[in-house]
Image (cartoon, rainbow, N blue to C red; front, side, top):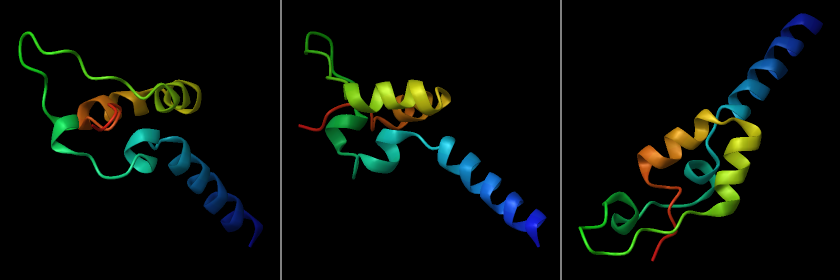
Length: 75
């Protein structure tokens, strides 16, 4: 009984640590966040809090956030 509870808690902790903060907590990703700016347009702003949380909690989560565009601030 204790082994199964321990395994469940470890699995839950791993799942939580492998999530990317901006993707999970940032809300719906807009078209502005998904598309790259054209040449001559200003760069999109990054959500600093989500980036710092990704780096501290699970740095590969930042890769997921940049790939989905969730790390960028919505308009």
